[in-house]
Image (cartoon, rainbow, N blue to C red; front, top):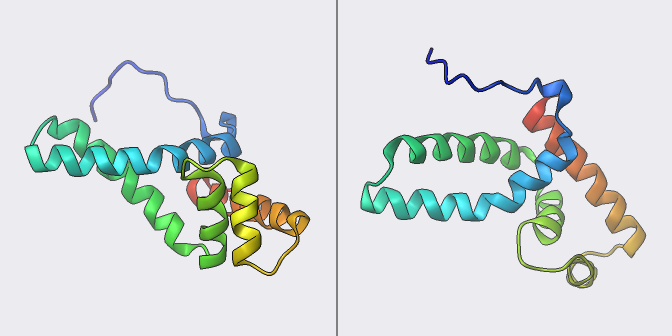
Amino acid sequence: MKNNNKKMIPLHDVDQKRATIRVMRDYINMKKTVLTNRAHQQNQLQIQRLAELLNWFERAWEILEPEAQLILSQFYMGTTLKNKAVETLLTKLPYSERILHRKKDRALKELASLLFGK
């Protein structure tokens, strides 16, 4: 195993909620980068690492229920502002705003657990 002299952060020291939100927000850009650079065969090592990260995220994402995916994607994976996400979700799902926020929190906790463990 190659030692890059970079100090690894133990997972128990990671703020899993913030890290999960960051991964969701970065997901679309990482996917575009991988696809674009694969097409041009550039930076193969970096693309391989990004592809591994995408695969790690996608495996966890696929385990979530479709409703949880919809809620999280509206809040964190697009360019939509949070209040607009709520408006959009209120038209698609039969819940109050309060329940939507609870479902978002539960889905985020579940995804963080799938990504980082408990």
